[in-house]
Image (cartoon, rainbow, N blue to C red; front, side):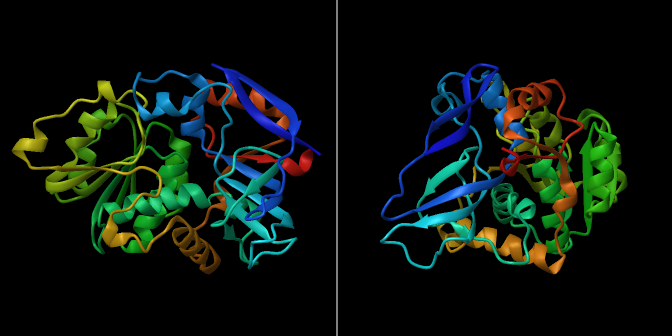
Length: 332
């Protein structure tokens, strides 16, 4: 059996390859992908191939590289050692953009009330949820979210669910800000973070933000974002810069004692270890089912995997016009 798989064969080189499908593992599942969501920021970095030497980015991205980690599939075969799954079950996993996948539990069984397209957000939703937990976000907090791409949109919604008093969204793209406003941002600022200080002062009574989430991953944003955090507040690095050597501190860390925290994937400290990736995904599904979060309307583009070379070239040229970008494997 053959599987169509998306492969980065080199910098800015993409192919849809026909390769031998994986075998059914005795302790795993064989499934056919329905949709997979592009993590537009991460995958654009992997596609571009420009990153500091010695970083986790450089250690991870080796060509040929199989991108993607947000996969919704239907189980076709169940390994002899696996319990709790049956053919026909819909599952979410962090498998790559592949037509046929072999995965081992833990994977998340998708409940009936959640669509394939909604479930495809589960990985990004757990990354965002982890950031909110690490920020120790509390009811009544004043929050700034910088960068309203897919991750920033989810941070806005989680901040609303938690009960933030002010959720201030900052981005250069008016369309993204409009979407953020429809999903819980209380005020929006269309412009550079370098010019956002008066905006944040105005909407926090001059106090500045309790927590600032930098969801851009751009090294130049970090020192500018520090200005928006109140004394003893928290700066959350949620976007992952491929050029950390260019990130610079400001005096705010010393003089105003701003705390800096970073998050990576769903890694949580031991006191929060009960919130595994699967459990966080299940909580996200519960929020979606109850109408407390919405992601179906964040999908801006759907493509056949056969269009992958054009899709990644488009994302590299301009990501500001997109949010959720899906590969629909049912089109093959």
